[in-house]
Image (tube, rainbow, N blue to C red):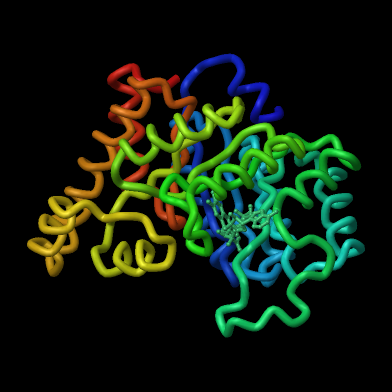
Length: 291
Ligand SMILES: Cc1cc2nc3c(=O)[nH]c(=O)nc-3n(C[C@H](O)[C@H](O)[C@H](O)COP(=O)(O)OP(=O)(O)OC[C@H]3O[C@@H](n4cnc5c(N)ncnc54)[C@H](O)[C@@H]3O)c2cc1C
């Protein structure tokens, strides 16, 4: 089913993001993890795409198997940076033939060495990939958005303007970068609506399970770790289970507040683990906040 169609039904649900493991054994383990999340009835599961297409084959394999063996709706991430049109066409043809209906159309990160030589084979920004997909395929198209601004952009007004172009090109829904302060999401949704973006904006939530890891992620993506949360994490930094307890409780409160205030769904950055996500979603289901 197309994700946008499911979202239109207005039932708030959850979704889970996985990255493709590098080994066959890792893929089997991931499928087992995904299986444990089946009772939570996710709206979809998304499978990421390694930088510059490095995981292309594994992404396709994992996406196909999750759809075929677990019967879950799949959203396949695809980045266009460094890919020729022929490569992208082959990929999308294969995904369409496998019955995949949903693509998260992304540009991908610029090379970390600052070079751009050979980077832009066909498309420079994600809106061009979105337009290509909308013109040539029948996928439901998702795109990324950034409540605190994209890390290359110093101007959040321009950032939302470019997002509007991405939606105008054919994006049917958006998923946000992770954030820890719901006000950031609400402000962002207001700014997006003000420039005419009407598609569903799904908040992306990462349950914290490791303090150092969350520090790394927030440094990379620019999400703000609120001071009080940071202090609690520092206090527990060397007691892993206590960090997980806090992370689960914090993310549960975050999701409950987002859902009560009308978020269309919640998307979990699971990092291929299920325990924290299962605890959070189970509580939200028990409280009748998710379908
Ligand atoms: C939900 C989500 C999932 C992701 N999954 C993956 C993944 O699987 N694999 C992966 O490698 N990366 C992934 N990323 C990271 C993403 O690839 C990077 O953040 C990347 O740097 C930007 O991708 P984008 O599609 O948002 O790009 P774009 O929408 O193209 O934006 C990139 C930058 O360019 C600016 N911009 C856009 N259009 C224009 C224009 N016309 N003129 C000037 N500036 C413009 C934007 O403001 C922004 O700063 C994901 C991010 C999110 C939020």
